[in-house]
Length: 84
Image (cartoon, rainbow, N blue to C red; front, side, top):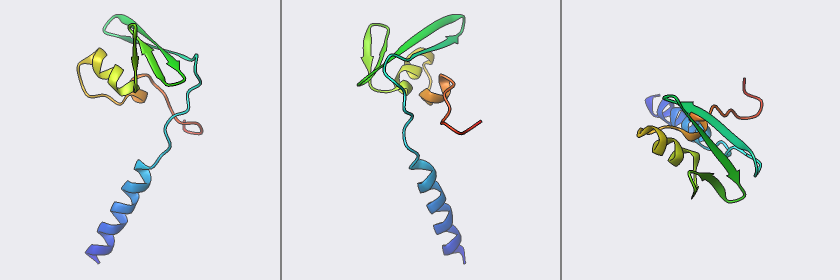
């Protein structure tokens, strides 16, 4: 019984982790105010432009801005389509 419960929990976590990445169109601008400063990120075809540099992920940008581990999409207030 315990084994089945553990397998069920494991399967639930695997499914949750398998969500597809956000689809952002190149040219989209993401704006976030943090500690009185406004930050703007430009979505490009191969990643993001921020502070004159190219970045692979929003999470790397959020970490750079805050100095802490953040989910980039969460930091910029992004949600998946169909979720309220």
